[in-house]
Image (cartoon, rainbow, N blue to C red; front, side, top):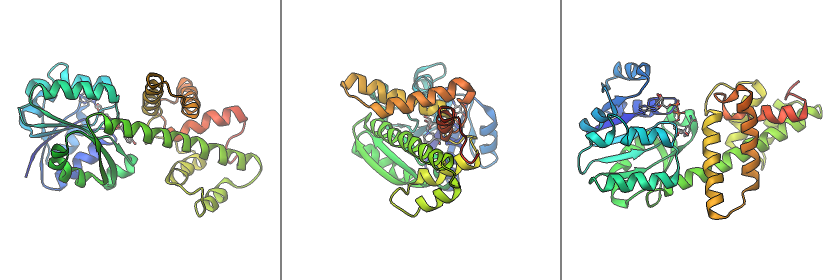
Length: 295
Ligand code: NAD
């Protein structure tokens, strides 16, 4: 059984690390927040005092933290992975962060003899808990093959996209689809509700037709039930759409609806909704309509 490390045991990382433990692997764990580490210890994880210690004790280190500066801190900050990591070991960043920074981090670690994969995920908390995540991977094919058995414990649809950074580019594309679909579902349910139709029945009917989607099913239900606890936080989706819009700017590309979805999330965040689930994007649409779904 492999000696694994897991850094970042939040909404996603804790269940993902739990699957690796349940499969019989040794998991060295660290998070700035001690509570989830304690919980995993009771299921067999080895507690570490720092990211450096995780790297010292592990052959493959998985990272699942919020944003680009967090990954940078984990890799190169105080008591960082780069201070403990051994030549020939693998660092797998499963967070959703900047493709540009990802290439730079991979270059710096490669110079230390460390192999790197970017492997962001889609499927949300439900996918993490059920071990059914979609995993999009950037890095060398032989490193991908080495880590694939562990990806298969945490996910179902595992695709090697290309070089370092390409996994993150794929994830940004994913987040464009997710945001625009949430926006579309929000508009549709708001329209139906304002017109006097029962949004529950409308969702039920739409789920059997061409407008069917996982987002209509899950986020649509959240909008109707007013269940906006996270889930996937608004501020994390703001981060992802900012990556899309920064990328578009540097590519000279126009992404008009991504820009609108980003503005709607900004409106929710500025009213105190940063830590709500991203389905709360509908709150901004409801504000514009002066109507709540189901009211
Ligand atoms: P989260 O905020 O619940 O968890 C992140 C964890 O990282 C926290 O426990 C935090 O203490 C820890 N952390 C931060 N900096 C650290 C450091 N320097 N050293 C050690 N630990 C550190 O976030 P999450 O929802 O689990 O998301 C993690 C990543 O996964 C993000 O990039 C997000 O975009 C992505 N993602 C989330 C979802 C989702 O539905 N939540 C779905 C797909 C992808």
